[in-house]
Length: 124
Image (cartoon, rainbow, N blue to C red):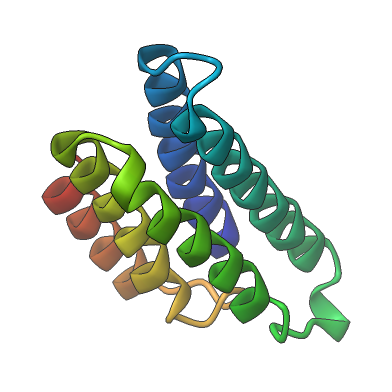
């Protein structure tokens, strides 16, 4: 159950990237980098789903590798996007980083409350 909350937030950031792709021209460098960011988010989501399926033998070693790719895409987008769009995207990625600091497979009500507050704070 805990991973499902993380996946929901990742999908929410993915929706932000698809909205931004509609705003920017297909030939622009921002559009290409938004596609790469969306792909990195999808890879992280697939990894978390597989992690949820393999609970007895889970390892969280690859989460950092996925976050490095997302951070790289976000750094490149800093110069390509308008300031408001970049801030919205940066806040979404910040929420992902914060919720991934909790243990990814153990469910706790405390984590659910914290992730709900992060969503309320950063997305609304």
